[in-house]
Each structure stands twice: as structure tokens, then as C-alpha cells.
Amino acid sequence: MGLFGKLFGGGGTAMPFEDIEPGMVFKVRGGGLSKVVKVEPEGVHVVDAGESKPIEAGGMSFSMGGMHMPMSRRTWESGRPVLERTEPVEEHELEGYEIWRSDGGGWF
Image (cartoon, rainbow, N blue to C red; front, side, top):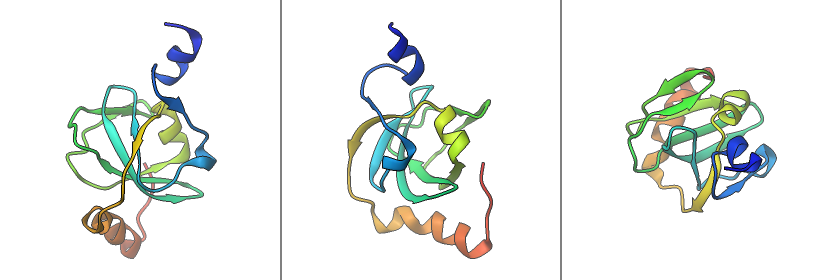
């Protein structure tokens, strides 16, 4: 595997944080798929995109299981996200975000 593959997990297209938009589905280190449902300057809000493999980011392993995960920019980038596809954000995928927002939640 070349240098690009080692840095970004191979395959797909590496994307600068500033270009991330809701609906983008990324493969992250460890093989999991995460769908971005909201983007904020501090980080991204993601949900599991159909595969339940753990996500490795920030020195930790997360199992999404369909739940909302607010990931700081630093944690997100450490997962070496690679764009796989784009799809619409469904209303139910925003439920966890809305709870997080109303509770004044923090970032992983």
C-alpha cells in the first residue's frame, strides 16, 4: 500500500474537513461506515451507516449501533475518513442530534 493508502485507509477519496456535508458516508479506520448528519465548526455528528463494525478514532473504539455520535474535528480526522458515497439524511437520523443539542451535549 502506498503512502496515500497508509494515511487515508486506502481507496475512496480523502476529503478536507471544510468540504464535509450532511449525507456524506465515510469509511473510517477499522472498516465501519459513518454517515454525517450535521456539520459544525467544532466537529461532525454521525450515525452508523449500516455496518456495525467498531470505529477507531482518537485512540478509542466506538460501536455505533445506529446511535448519534458527536465527534470533534480532531477525533473525526484521526479516524482517517474516506468518502464512500452520498445519500439523503433521513429525519429519524437527526433524533439523536436534536437530543444532544437540547441537552447542551459535548464532543468525543
